[in-house]
Length: 320
Image (tube, rainbow, N blue to C red):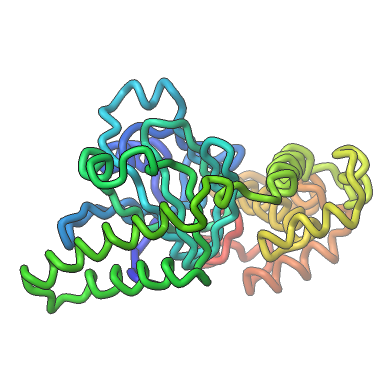
């Protein structure tokens, strides 16, 4: 990781306001039923560039034409994935980013970032549009992707790492800024054709988005299985399983995470309201049809029983 960022539980509206103040107008969509998220937004200036640190466990963040009309859109954002994964799309490019991957986003074009409710953190280098247009003209385009294994990506990461060293002097900072522009030019002209940045696996990325939305909507159905998911999504079970490898998780594991998250929310509500709702009722309402299995899974995940669940367990909460 290039940088570190402490995150905490924030109201969604506060996170949206912080993001707007630093990056411009974006719509923030938390996971279903949540009005808080785990996240943080921070800003700093280094090497002649503005940086935004953005962490969140939202469902997705998007910027459409109405958002673009609300601010001046003066930048390109060079996104560096720092933690977790994110499905990023702009124009015809749809990419799953993992730590070390890069993507160039044009703030004047609609874009969407999907996190599937999982914790994800990005470093955004705010590169001035006027300067980039002067240097690169028509070669400049949003949606450009570069994997962490590419030599240019490795060089960009190395320059950024040097930029964040505390010992930099003014003259060194100036050269680091020029190095960033030069490497961005290398990124833009790599391969000589825009076709390079088009994801060959757009279909799988879109299927993943559909599958996650399907599970989010149906996870409380205790009869839901991978075979039924695949049937309803009109794909094979094998294809569905393969699609979730982009998240380093299986469909069944994601389904269990969602059910645990629902149970946690209900347990929190039970504690707050001092409700007499039975643990078994909460488990069945969350989609579990075996109380013993629910108790074992809950203890394995949170190191406490559902009845002992309190704020000390929230650190591991999959829905927090």
